[in-house]
Length: 307
Ligand code: CP
Image (cartoon, rainbow, N blue to C red; front, side, top):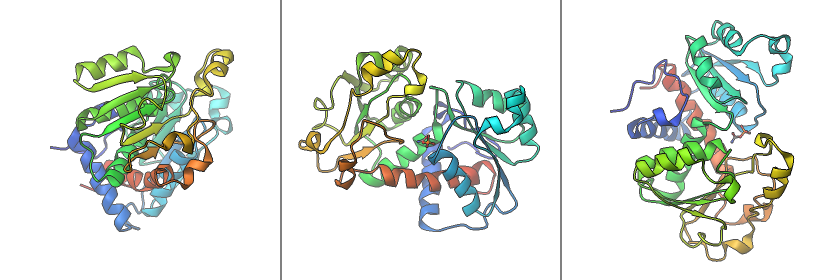
């Protein structure tokens, strides 16, 4: 049975059961098929972004407006009283008096949970440091189901920055529910953190570690590519050593399965050449578009307007 979403904080994908995930995806599918322009009339989204974003912030704000609601918030914390020393707790407490639901992105792990302590309105984690990005994972799953016509028993390669990439941390956890086989492709320095791989092992997930895309390309249904997260490296020289570890080009796709689809949470930097965009494997722009419908579904659910 899925949990009741009304007033629920969305902090980590680990708090979602399989039934919860499927419920969000079903609502997203309906919202993609038919618009609901008055569903959230009179409701206000507080959009609090302490870190840069294009897709997450704009798709949530667009989702709220498509459903008839309004948006307040900020994309630059330097234009708020944070600049004068106001704490995260106080900022969120104040915004919760002005909004019915709050989206937050922050550079610190655990910031969304701290925001939830300050707010009596639902908090949606839009990325906290290298920790979690649960709404991106729901978009990833929606897109995988859409392009593969199933979610169960897929071979999925997670490629790139598995150490700092919060989207892969969340996605690996979610795929536990769907009997996936994971291929973890990263330089040694950027492999999945030990704790995360221990959890996968404990949950009986089949996974193996690899250094090159060539080792896995002929085996996988989904290639989930990620950017090396420059902003999370303590030493710029460490970033320089790995920044070009993966550059996906059409040449590497010669042995791909016909049903292979490439996903990427975006933005891309060096790791995905624009020439790949024109191949039938490229699914990342549709993935970003799907963000609108998945986020509409989440807003409708936590505000109690979808059941
Ligand atoms: N995928 C994602 O989180 O993109 P933004 O950083 O642009 O929000």
